[in-house]
Length: 326
Length: 86
Image (cartoon, rainbow over all chains, first blue to last red; front, side):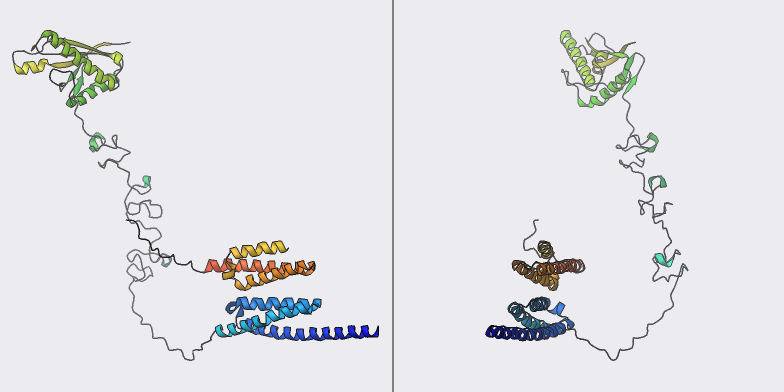
């Protein structure tokens, strides 16, 4: 029993001695860590410093718990890390340079400054040297109007181009570039003079009379065929428009020929030509019910068939206004 | 608490904490490892204290990494070796 007590006392004494030694080691490491930290270790050797600090803390914890073996292993990790941190920090510590004598600055030459607009901002610093303006705006007036359209630049959507205030300082758009703004242009995509409201002058090829539609240009066909030539499309379009505009009107399309050739064939050709014209008008949007095509052949000449000019006049298409539907 | 510290450390690593805040990240890493060790020995009180410390360091590392990324200039784009298409 006495022996056992003696052995326990020896172990306790050893443990106490070991704990005391470990605390001393821990204090030494703590001092190294402190030195490293003061020399900027956190920046110069962050990983080493962190390793040293953490292991020192763990060692202290283990010493408190009485686990000297674990404390030892942490101290063994902390010590080299602290040394390494101190070394690295010493190498990268800041170097202070003291400048004992500062050379005197050369005197700044002062020159008389011009201020043309008298706004207190010298011309060299004045962005608007001819217009007075406050120094906060570098000598420019509060609101400029670069394009001079009476709309100040702060609200002018086109500050470089003059335009009316109704369009926020921008010029009115003019798609066809005819000088008539789109808002006043009845033909905004076709250039035309101002006195025709921006529309091109179009030659009027027909005259609508009470009983007929008079053509200023005859309708042309391929010789001996019922195919309309393209130079007659304009006049036919105008006829179509006129018939469409007068919806209650019925129109008789008359085909006429000269007397050259067989009568029967002339009759047939004049009918086919009248039909071709009717078909064209219907394609242009005229109601087919308004139109009637009749071929008269050479029966109704308007000039002598003895001359070439007379025969040309006799080969024709006429539009007769037949009646007004109610 | 250990899980929370672990998650915080993962976030820190995602924020490039190893490079931008190495001091705090290393501390968080070591404290978390020690907390796990203590938990393994069923010393839950110590484990919790260490894990809380680990969490605190991880958060500090995230914050520092974020601040440094905001202040540091962006890296110059790498030069392409390919020939641009005409």
